Image 1 (tube, rainbow, N blue to C red):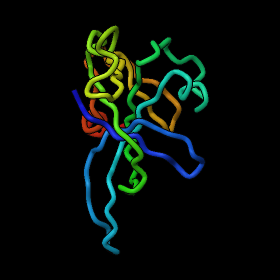
Image 2 (cartoon, rainbow, N blue to C red):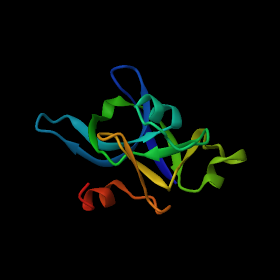
Image 3 (tube, rainbow, N blue to C red):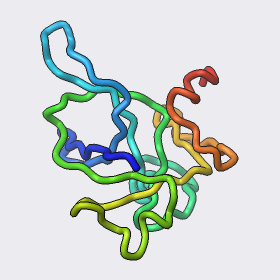
Image 4 (cartoon, helix red, strand yellow):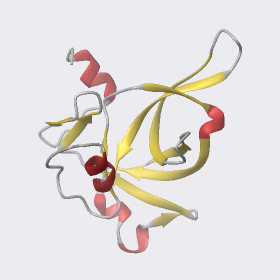
Length: 132
């Protein structure tokens, strides 16, 4: 189970993200590298032609990594890999919602393409190593 932040962007949209690294820039500002999780509605809004049907608490992880300010974090949720841990009485843990990732695909936000993973669920680092 991962504790993942929710960030709010300038357009007031909110996103669940995975923290990849935390750092300070040259000005001393605290930032972090993150990858987005997308719900079915967010995939559709982002222009994906035929996103997989996702359950209410199911997410697809993006392979792209972006910087964000620690001050953009507005909350947290739990993200798990087993749907049984995010359904029924397990929809919250410690008062926080629980979501789960779709292990069959990852999403490239730049190309708007979904890539099948044979249910292994690639991490961002794996995708970068593949040279994509």
